Amino acid sequence: MSEEFSCQISPPFLSLGSDRDLDLDSTLQELSMYNFPVEINHTGMEVANFLEKYPLLPGVILVEQGRFFGMISRRRLLEFLIRPYGQELLVQQPLAVLYSYARIPMLLLADTTSILTAMQLSLKRSPELLAEPIVVQTESGAYRLLDVQELNIISWQIRGIDNLVRYERSQAQMIQNDKMANLGRLVDGVAHEILDPVGFIWGNITYVSTYSQDLLKLIAAYDQELPSVSQAINLLKEDIEFDFLEQDLSRSLASIRTGAERLKKLVTSLQNFCHIDELYPKPVDLHASIDTIILLINSRLQGEIEIVKYYGQLPPVYCFIGQLNQVLMNIFSEVVDILLNEAVRQQLHLEETKAVQKPRIEITTKVISQEASNPNAPDSRWVLIRIADNGPGISQELQQQIIESFSLETKNSKNTSLAVSYRIITVRHGGKLNFNSQIGIGTKFEILLPLL
Image 1: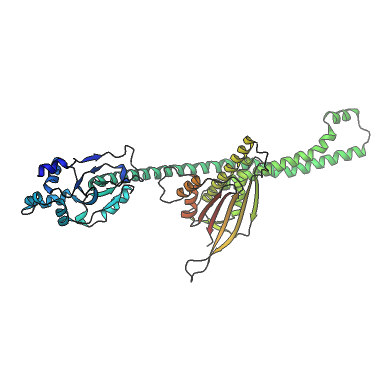
Image 2: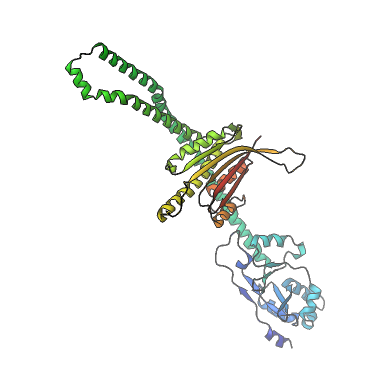
């Protein structure tokens, strides 16, 4: 009779998992699992024969007329064998009876469960159940057996890879930080060297302007006292175009003064942007920092983007100004890229049928209050920096990617500038960085810094 049943049991097979490299997001469906369903009217000895033939088979899936009934592991069946009269029991009793004797809590998971989550759930079981295989339900409704030892090995491999990636990231970040610090010192030194001749020009332009005006007055006095001058002097005046020189000299000096002033502001802004933060935050003028960034990116605006400022009354804010400048530069660069790309798109499509508004960036700063979660605590005060544009907006898919990159536990291999900015604001300054975009309306970034 048992030979008849044995012929009716399909041999187990091992389903192949995914051939791609496993990572933190990998799920159970990417692992190899055993498929061995047996009807509950078969005897335990029939199943024991298969366990002897397939030594790696972790157990058997019990089904009743094709529907899932339960699971008996290899360990439980072997326990029956070593009991008194165990072999007679396995030969005579169907699996349904054995399952009623050996029924224990089993871990049933969907195949979409991540490998690391499955490992955590497996370890939460009581000690006597830690070696039991895991029952995995596929999307098609079938049931598979996953060897817990296989799960342990795979999960530790994934964690090892994750730790290695984190280590390499930290090393790369340390090297990058060191490079940026050295670059900041280099730029600061170059800016200081530029400021010396600029200061020389700026300091002497006033004297040159005064001297030139005095010389022109002297020449005018000579012309008035000596109306009749020699022919040689008249020829020299014509040769040097004295009348034009007299009118243009003051304008030239004014242009030199304007250029020197602009260069001085630019170099000073560059020095402020490359500021190397100290151990503790210091009070800074946020408006000056914003103006510094605008001056540095002015060449990218190309006169096509309008900057509108709505500055409120802000107290000095304690922060790491070097890192905050990096955040402002990242956000402004992102907004400018969006507006310039939209301007190019409009030019290519020659959108003359509708009025195209000029690209604009609005900067708003103010102090706001937020209600405390504890009713007995005072309201918290924050400094708000809002940077908004009137561009085309960002798609929902890209917005979701940006928001996911804000997670401190992000698994992305690439840290974007906005993700770095989020960490600087939230972790380094205890603030908030909010992001919102609507198609056809624009994109808005809000930085909230706590007031101490």
